[in-house]
Length: 137
Image 1 (cartoon, rainbow, N blue to C red):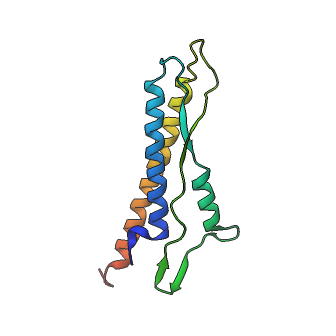
Image 2: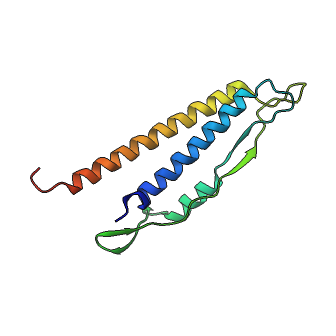
Image 3: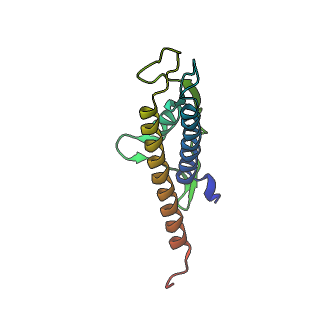
């Protein structure tokens, strides 16, 4: 089984990649906070949310497609992430629409989501290690 492309690890890897890309855009927004006419950009996360919804069943949460009792089939493709221009609450006289407080809040939210994803990834790897040990060790 290709562990990296299993539904659990594949979904987490995709989410971590998306969060990394979002953090980069937020850093660019902050760096351009005093650039005349600059409008902040962000990721449109609806592609990831649609993929997650297509993978889930309302009654049971995420479902894995299995070809046998011992195998998991990877599900879904990579979600499309689009960069969108998303103005903050205010626009200055020079046309800059970056509000540093909002960008810093988004950066903190993204960092916390990334840390949660890393923790889940590590726990998943721990479970795989436990499952792969010979009995009695």
